[in-house]
Length: 201
Image (tube, rainbow, N blue to C red; front, side, top):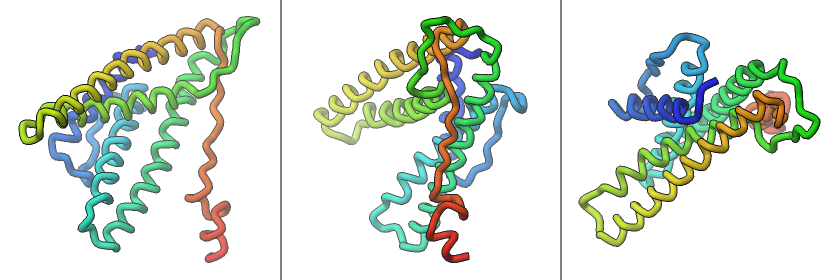
């Protein structure tokens, strides 16, 4: 299983690749072997990166109502894709440890490995964009210092979260912790569960 620093390197690569054109409609060109963990992590961060920029676009005060609705629906679809990808990553990770004998003191973890990895993916985006803001030359020194402080906090979070992910994976491998995948069962996209959708069939 990959270590957290290897995951972060994949996330950073996806972020950098996206920003070569910085276009939410560009086609992903995943450089990793199909069905590999690396491919899934790259695809996961690509979803996050595109959604990050969709969230920026929809906050444009001058955006037209029809465009805002289009973007909002893309964000909804992206949220579903993100959840599906997290669960796919969890399935792949937990399959690696399904034969591990649990220790008598093993405790259930509060979140699955892939949801912790999801936070690392988002953190890669936060660091990338905060570095830009922390190094701007067109802002007051006070704001620049504030942004640099925020960047330093994000980097501490990266160290801590990476350590926690590595510990979780090690504990799963040695039977010290238990993790389960509970499907998110999002209702708003489901035509059988969202009343607005099923009442208008």
